Amino acid sequence: MSEMRVPAGPGGPSVVCECECDDVFLNEVEKVASMYRGRPEDLVQALHDVQSLRNYLPREALRVVARTLDVPESRVHGVATFYSMFSTRPRGRHIIRICESAPCHVAGAAEIIDSLLDELGVEMGGTTSDKLFTVETSSCLGVCGVAPAIMIDDVVYGNLCAEDLPEILRRYR
Ligand code: FES
Image (tube, rainbow, N blue to C red):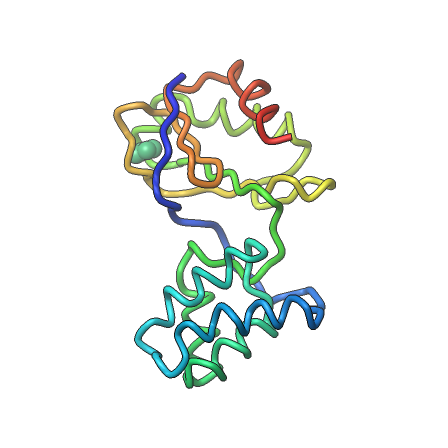
């Protein structure tokens, strides 16, 4: 197994927000969005920063971003749901992305996926009951030389075999 830290990569599917946002959280969102006040060209970066607060983008947070950057809500929602790196669905504290592209597939990604979902007791796209992990598929993580690979938050684990998973997950528990 090999391990490396890389910038955050693509995420999984996005659906409509299901949460209720409290004032404390919305104040945090406003504070972050204010760094981009009146700068619609920085919408993607603003959404990145806001998402880092809770690992996803609740609907109310999108409204705050729209108002602060002076961008139509429909556009903010469109961007937040277009890019796979964003999620408007609540996710766990740690995001596990499993590469499904051809080189990883050939190198045994299917076995890694089965073992990981089994170990966590979730389905693909799901979040563990303790809200610690969300598991998503990903296209190439850019580390095909160490396929099969997964990424947990901003750390890539390559040359994986199913037996490595329990030890890796333990580091995040
Ligand atoms: S195909 Fe999996 S990292 Fe490139």
